[in-house]
Length: 184
Image (cartoon, rainbow, N blue to C red):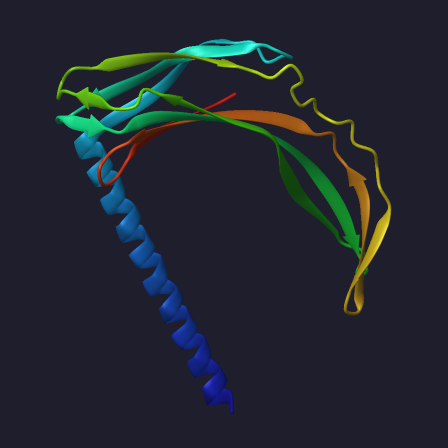
């Protein structure tokens, strides 16, 4: 019986290694193909994060070869994150970071674009925020008990929430798209 258990762990370890290598190869090939098409970056000139404010900037595209784009899409996401400290029945604390999406909006710039190799293109944008944007909630310590089999956990405290804004740009191309991210 000991042999089967050890053999199963060996097979599981080999399968995990193979999956990791395949994932690495796919990721590497994708990055190489993207770099052959060119690069893209987001530059923010103004970020007025308040009710009804605006975020303005430029998406810079540097094509390495001639490209025909079907459109450029911007996605703005606001996430709130906080930490919870939970105490298990064994007396040890476990800190977990939790998060939730508080706001998301999408903007499409241009329908089709012809980009020439070696000719950089800058596309300006201005995102209007809604009249009421998310605010970080004041966290209150909570006492909650839950049971997981024989172990019970208590949420002892919750840190105050932090808002993180992320702007993503995606250039829709045949095959692999170009993308860029900006966090603030």
